[in-house]
Image (cartoon, rainbow, N blue to C red; front, side, top):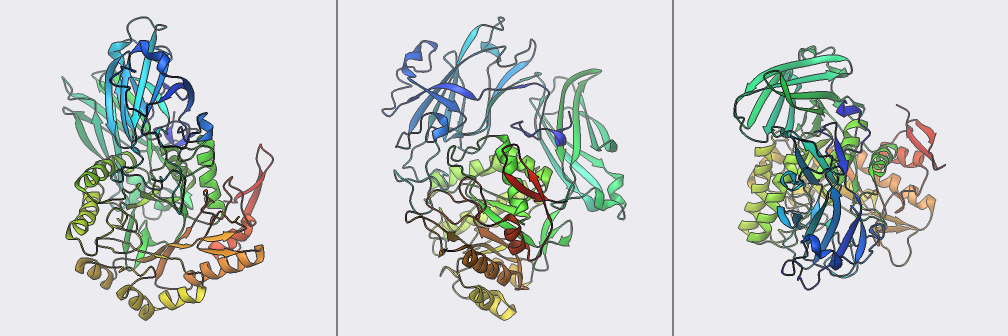
Length: 621
């Protein structure tokens, strides 16, 4: 199977094997408000009576789709499911792994009463090996038990938009506790590919593959990597690997032809994906074979512009909260993730900033495949402490490792609006932390711009992202309409009365023209909201809504020093009713109208009718 042509259901789209089994669906469930479960051995196979309810995984227990729908304070929850080796796809002579896409925030996993794994970090995947507990009978029953702990009052945890109060208020939403991304099983050989990362360098006509094996081979193995575009073989290399990690550099001669390069490069307008096949062999024996994909593209800044594939690229982005009414931070399913990407593009945007959340990898797959730039962000902690630094840094490293090969991700945002570093302007420790996160990000991935603290109080950002929620287009022009106006805005307190630049290094990066200016949050206009909802500005008619949006978008496009924007926001979310779409993803104005407002031109939109009868629009191209 070619990974670039998959149906979007695989939970790990850039490392695919033929056999895998989804473990979503009904599990037994229990709250453990007194935290007695470990002491009372709820993880034992005989402890079934403790699990008095049924939950539908992967939907969090706070959501209605889970079947629980309890939004109260429950710091500890337990899950239980009976499976057979056949359910897990177990095969003789191979390892049986159970993967968890994300469990918020701390997880412990038992199989038949034996602890098989632990993980801290609510947004990143982990894996447990249950091979030794399955025995020889493929139909014998085994018990998987998961304990998740997510203290709703611990503000040191990366929590993003999850509210610490009982009911959502302000810009915060219902909590997401426990399992909230797909649980799945996989049968793999003892020596197998654990991690795979891709780095493209079109100027050098090369692709680098970084490979991690399950362990150091007893005897050296050979690894073959083949890259194809359709039926065209772009590159192939075989190398001898004696250790647990290997770096393979592949020459891609077709990219060296500058007159023919455009057909190979990935962009939103031309999302070309290169398929990759990786085979690990011991002699003539195939030990492991995986499918992957990558995009040939570069993302950088220079001359006050964002550069995609070496050329200035104007970023038209929208803020996406990744929240659904019935499933909360969990997506309703793979089709919903594809539809989200399609909607963003149909509205005229070429980018999305997934806000205070690490999105499901299947969303990133559709962004890769359909062509949508993504700003990769993390949920923030709300306090600054040694514990908070440790938690977010560890999780951020796992985020970078998971997502660094997606061509759609073009910018990293480890901090936003000084969340978790509220005193960064006066506390050297907090300033050092923000600087360290930027440096650490570049150490892991030097191929993308980094924003040290989006919105204001920048210390080491490649892009100067400013949040400006004025509802007056003429104010935007006054602040960003020419070089003098921009300099006055940058040097003075910003639109939110916060300093925009804190360090001499950041000032130098701005003064020498390296860092582009983007208005990375603006708008927030509420239309036809009820009294319990709010927006940064409110309108009462379609005409007024279209007129205000046209003015705001048009004002930013008219500012030559602004390299891009991000509108707040894509979808109404609970009490935050400033979306272009309602909570059930229906546009508040015709899609064509939004597209003309966002792009400033009447680009053609083709009409298609979905299976549910709703006529939607999609890009003619």
